[in-house]
Length: 138
Image (cartoon, rainbow, N blue to C red; front, side):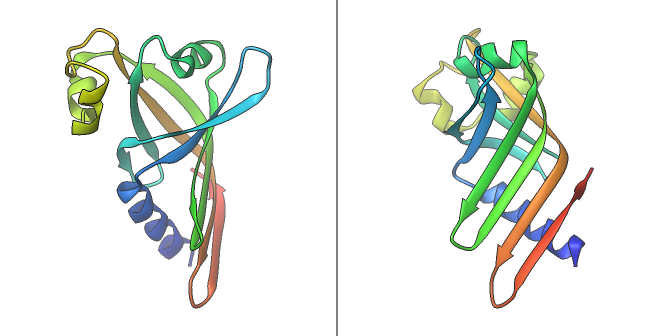
């Protein structure tokens, strides 16, 4: 059953309009805000596009521990892991999507970066005709 729930979670993440990304702030408290995923690989990793000068990028420089949550009335996907700021042009081009053009001139924009979240552990809950759960580590 774990594999079925993991597959469902991966499909949900791939189609998600937004997730909550939680990071540690300068005072050591967790803070969460919504962000749109650029690309995912199952539940293994999620990439997000943002500004190099954003609070997210600044917080990651100090502490790269993070959590991502994607939920609705039918599911709750919580991932815990690490996150990195990626600035190489190839990755920025790969993760670029049309919605980012409201904030950046293109993937070559020097202010644009990618946040790559790598899952270490997961907790998945699917609420359908029957309740399905899975948790574990990657």
